Structure formats: structure tokens, C-alpha cells
Length: 228
Length: 56
Image (cartoon, rainbow over all chains, first blue to last red; front, side, top):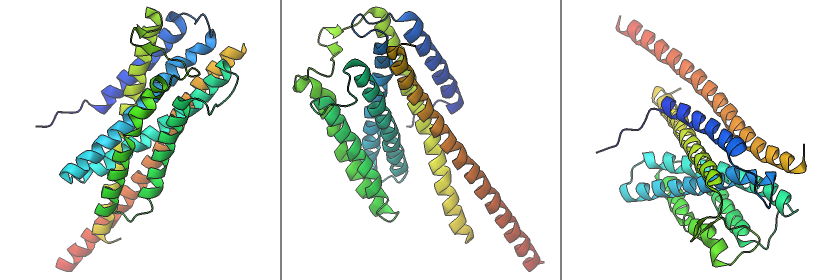
């Protein structure tokens, strides 16, 4: 039994409304941070983007697993789209992180932070996915090789996510601890709305991009069938 | 504008710009798909006319 997907147009409007609500809650509701001042507002875009990048890579890996388990051809494009969007959000994570680092620490990048370096490793690993994918002729072999690679990369996600806690990283801040989120209720609300809006926006982007790639593939097949 | 505000504007601006670039790339792709679909429709019509003449 398959679950019906919500209509894309409605999802797009909900995402737009959530983005607007997030902007209001970040700049009008959430108070300024006592330590970092106004620059702490970057937190509300940087962390949700990073979590969305992890989710996209995870989705790409899940679809890769489904391809390997069921041999379903459609999972190849789904996995590829997930990795592609993960890479876009990965670039955004690195750029917004660098801007926040410059505002807070006075440097754009520091190699001594395990969290930063491991995220960069994860990002570069998935960048190499595209080189691998496009170096193999289209077909079942490429689908399998891409799927195995995407699946391997998922192991780096928990390593990157928990690196800060495992390595006692004092440079990169830890906001979510065992005692709960270290912020006020308004800040947490703004963060949750921002996270929901960016995740939904990414899902809409995923659906749109997948539809485009499927149409492209169908047209190519039609062109071959017509022998043009 | 304070330096903190500049950094915040830069971070949010990068996010907006990347999403807009993605939309622009997708719009270009959609235009290409539309053009290719039109070409294939013309080709299919031409084929159908040739077949009709062949049968007639």
C-alpha cells in the first residue's frame, strides 16, 4: 500500500507561509543573545540548514538502500536528487557557518574544530559522488555503483553530528545538551519554526527537482523511441 | 548598520541567493523541456502524416 503524497502546490504555499512566520519569530519575537548579540540570529538559519543537509544525505542513502534491496529503477533518480539537494544545503551550511565564525570568533574557518572538519569531509565525500556517477555510463551498473557510494556516506552523518560531543570541542558551541536546549522559550520557538520551514522548503525543492529529472529522462526515452 | 547586522544580513542573503539561483536553474531547465516537448510533438505529427499518406 502506498501513501498518497500531498499536492506540491499546497506544500509550496505552506513552506512560504512557514518561512514568513520564521522571519517574524526570528527578528521580532526571539530576544537578542546576551553573549553574541545580534549576530547570534545566524544560528536560526545555520543550524536548520545543517540539519536539512544531513536529512537530504540520509534520504539519498535510504533511497540508495531501497534501490539495492528492490532493484527499483525509480530509486536511482530519487537517491541522486537527495544527494544533490544535500550538497546544495551542505554549501549553505559551510558558507553560513563561515560567516557566523567570522562574527563570533573573528576567523572564517578553524581546522581545530572537529565538527567543522568532519562536516567538510562529509560534504567532500558527497561531492565525489557526482564525479563517480558521471564517470560511469548510464544504466544498471551506474545505478548500483552510485547507490553503494551514497549508502557508505551515511555512516559519516552520525560521526559528523556527534563529533562535537565525542571530542569535547570547545570552539563550536553546544546548544542542545542532555538538560535540553540552552536558550529561552522564544528562541527555541523561533528555531523550531525556522527548522520546520527550511525542512519543508527542502522537501518541496526535492519534489520539484525530481519531477524535472523524471520528465527529462522520459523525454530522452521518447526521443529514442521516435528515433530522432 | 553594525558589524553584527552586516554578518546576519550576509548569512540570510546567501541563503536567499542560493534558493533564487536554484529557481533560475530550474526555470531554464523547464524552458528546455518545453522546447524539447514541442519538437517531439512536431516529430510525432510529421510521422503520423507520413503514415496516413502511406496507408492512403
